[in-house]
Length: 151
Image (cartoon, rainbow, N blue to C red; front, side):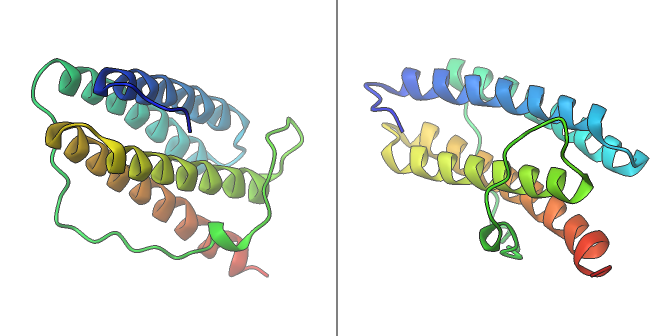
């Protein structure tokens, strides 16, 4: 991760990452063959766009507080090999890729929270890490129910 000289640089970086994530999920929604998976990825794309707006608002004023809620981690993403995005991915690989991206986003926000220069920024980043953990859990649950259960 790049060295950041200010909280503003952290916000700018996180905003760019949310833009990338929204575009990725919009692309995955288009690739998905099953309707409920298309809807899930479309919803994730919208949530990533909302995360961007949250970051912009937090940068300008308030901030966001993490909830006290514990997010379950099924740990499935940590057990699989890295999947590279390609037009040939099947359903299982799309879910694997999405899980890995959510884990990376969670790790990113957690690391940024550790170096945040203000409590407001730290709390905002911790709250966004929680959101990414929720996304990862939802994808892992889908993977568990539709891939692992079938095998």
